[in-house]
Length: 447
Image (tube, rainbow, N blue to C red):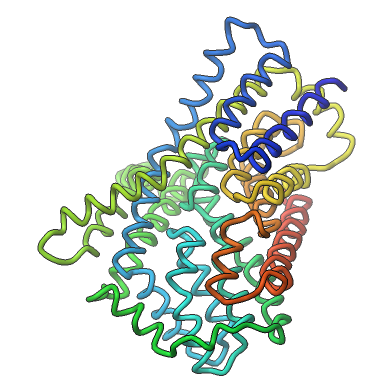
């Protein structure tokens, strides 16, 4: 029993240090690793090497992937490619179902672009559509914010889901994580869309702004890329990763010859994202392409560095827990409770609600539960994928005042805090609960 108490104290420490003391999550997780090592009684001469190997081990698998994915996202954001992606979806779907269209726009754009950046980029498009079609601006806001949030927490190559997949040993099978993530993200987005329709009567002052806002935002980017060029940097790598996963299935559906070797090579996440980076480079226009590329790369490195450090510290924390007797003890306890995917969901939801960052919730929870997969009955390949989905569902439950995304959504949409809680925060609660319900039902059938 004392092992569980130590674990609970560590979780409380992480929540308190990040939310109340405002300590950086990297430092917090590193401190938690040392505290766990001493509290669980690891031999003193192994503590340093265990933390170091845990930190380096996870980054050896997933660190470069996070960097490349982030750089691609920055380029898509800064070249106007995200705007082109949004406009292409609007043209494809037409204007008959504006909230559905807005949700799908967010759903696609947030795969490479962080949800808060995506909302800032697309807010003027949303505002323009709301005015033109006489649709509730709050309903359009919720549709966009939840569409963005769904893929942000569930679909690689967004850094949070990638880090969670890496912590759970899925770095060589990201294709399966992407495919399953798409399915559950669609469920989450539809749940958010449902609440968007229920938020039509809530008030906002957003439409008092200039009607030309979207055109001004569009002109800010200058000459925009073609739709193919805009979509290629993210969808070509995703396609390659998925094809590589298919080629690597134990049944060898594509044989074991040259086709298998080619797809297996191109489908490795690092190789696929390097190809995506090549397509992203084509988006940069003008005489000083290399200078622009250098600036975008620098920004990508600045954005990805904290995520990489947090991911590494999460790996160190998980490595310490794996060396303790906690797993065996919890195995005997949890096996009789049948919690399965509910346990990682609850931990991630508690962390998300307490400290605000979905990425921190994804990284920390996946590191925490990685040594417990066998005890939770989730130690199969698909069980680990469902665990990533459960953690992602928790990481969206809920976005409120301690989450920067909450303030981006409310302030850019000119909503007061009470309205934002009724619309955006409630929507993220519904998304999380619906998603974990479907993940749990899937686990009952598939595991």
